[in-house]
Amino acid sequence: MDTKLVAAALFSAVATHAMAAGAVFTISDDATANSVLAFSRADDGSLHLEGTFPTGGKGSGGGEGVLGSQGAVTLTGDGRFLLVVDAGSDEISVFRVHGARLTQTSRVSSGGALPVSVAEHDGLVYVLDAGGDGNIAGLRLDEDGALRPVPGSVLPLSAAGTGPAQIGFDASGRTLAVTEKASQTISLYRMGEDGRAAGPSPSPSAGATPFGFAFTRRDILAVSEAGGGSVSSYDLEGGELELVSATVSDGGRAPCWVVATSDGRRVFVANAGSGTVSSYLVDARGTLTLRDGTAGVIPGGKALDTALSAGDRFLYVIDPNHQAIQAFTVAADGSLAPLGEAASDLPPQAVGLAAR
Image (cartoon, rainbow, N blue to C red; front, side, top):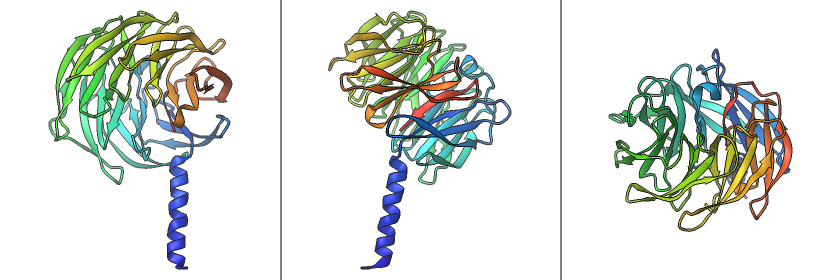
């Protein structure tokens, strides 16, 4: 047998295993030196700190109180790269992912001031900048993990001072959405073949203070409403939003962070003010039904950034009150069972969460 072929096969197998290994990532948001905290995930959902990886940039120093966003940490769709915001130095950092180990490949300007959220689709990256009047900006991510600006891609939000919270692509990558808390608006942008967006096209939010959102693979958009204690759903059709379910209350306080299961049939929402996680059912048309307003409870905690692991087996939530990442197992019926603190001793301003 050819030893070179054997060696190549072994290397490929090891590399594939490393890419598929479970991991969870957050950032310190330290104002002097921002870093990524990388955790390996065991089969039981517990986390082990594998390392702290400096970005070379600066965080805001204030965590969620400054960023007020979802999507500060994002894995690319293929899981090969991690994108994080350096809000204090107005940059985006990129890391190549090796299981729960990271190698930095790029750090570039965010295209504006105070980046708070970043999204990726097929190598196209868009950043949401909340500083100044606010804007979005596009970049291309190449095979080596280098980011390069897309010419002509910097566009305004619907108005100045809108308090933007999240940017994200729909399933096809042809539409970008941005939630704007202060203006009670969801703005859409149409994507061109050259990677440049056109817009914004603003739509009024059904509820107060639209914050986090998740697109399902059927292009149903579920949006949390932090000011109304509710979640609304919209059908993205022809580049426009059609309201399906308006302000479905979850009984919690300040619902902000939203994640959808891979099949798009369930949505989990973290309620910052009540330290709980709510679960919703989503039918084929996009109708929301509250399944359990307190599917997950963090006693004495505060529920912030939320992420589902690969295969939707585990749900992770940043809990700043205990400086921990709380974990839940996700049953086949969507119910949650608490695992407790999967990781502890987080920086008090840790923000952003991504899982695989």
